[in-house]
Image 1 (cartoon, rainbow over the protein chains, first blue to last red):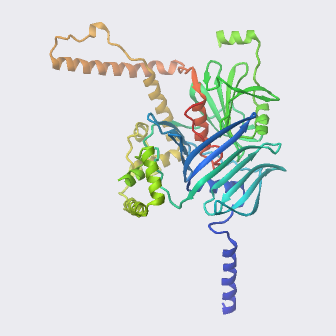
Image 2 (spheres, one colour; image 1 turned 90 degrees about the vertical axis):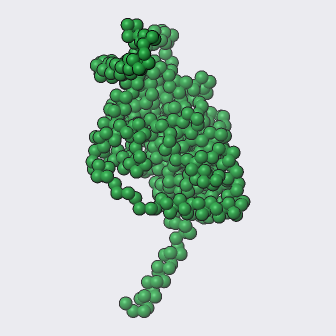
Length: 312
Length: 190
């Protein structure tokens, strides 16, 4: 190799290196963006604001995020979430572990646009917009160095913002030893099961896994690669607590009891023989589409209700 | 001392706040914290002990499943067993069956001893102790026998109430397996 060729090669390599953003390559698609965010390591204060049915839900919490695990402190309560585990870390800590390998559900119905670099909280970032066709579904401010999503904005189909999550007091780490790992918490172990009851696809969401759940119920976990929800199918006998003072969610398929939180929407309804609980982070218009493909709420005549009460 | 407890996750919330402030402002504390981390890191990278053959991936877990459910595995065994469970359907099924059997046994009502088995209080201490032990053994055996005799023929008792917090925690746990980091929450109250 001549000296000229060598120089050209070194020069080209240097140009390629300079073209890469500081701290790592920008993700190519939505799956990569979310994967890198999941693997980021940081501590931060997290503020989540959601708008559901004209009401605002707000949560402020301190988060330690490392390798897919999160330790979350809300007021004086710690909880641990990640890699299939969820546990409350109080005096009588208990938790649940799902031993499952979900199929990689690709976020095919979404496309992303990477916008110009921005500086946020004195950090070098870029903006990622997620669209479903022409509809803006999400906008993220992504920290270039760690891949963490410093701001997440989620949009309804009509363009209105329904959830905004912001991180402040953000500190990124290469390595971080979380103060708690949850290894001492007794965990219920749950494994996936075959289900003949749950539909494989609902309004663009794919059934990733099915599990048995409390009260003889069945849990179906659905995802479209970006948003997720769980559908719990319970027998008519089961009492579901937590819906004592619900809001009404009105969809074309009927009226549902709704108790939203800052992080998720939670619905409850009954048809003739079963009860259903839906928990998820999906946008309101997606929720309407999903509900239209599931059994509808049964207004039920007085006789039906009495019959069910007496004989189940 | 507090820094060590911080790494062990043994601090109270108040102590934790103190440590966080110290690590932000106090240079001596920061240096000490780094030194402590380095020491721990050095300990962690010490050569591991040789792994027993029966723990190597590929072997089914057998009796270790029971220890896994009891939380009696030693630290060294835990990652190996977890990794095996992630890949072996047979062991996962066996673990599920084992867990179901234990739940059935736990759900059995306690058995009260009939009157004619009542221990005479005037008996000597050693005799009393022996009878009670025998009674416990008889009760235990009877409970297990009942579980295996009637367990398969009776329908599983159906709990009558579930809470939305529990269902949400289950959703959160499953959702945390996938790569999407949106909407994570474990609730303690509805």
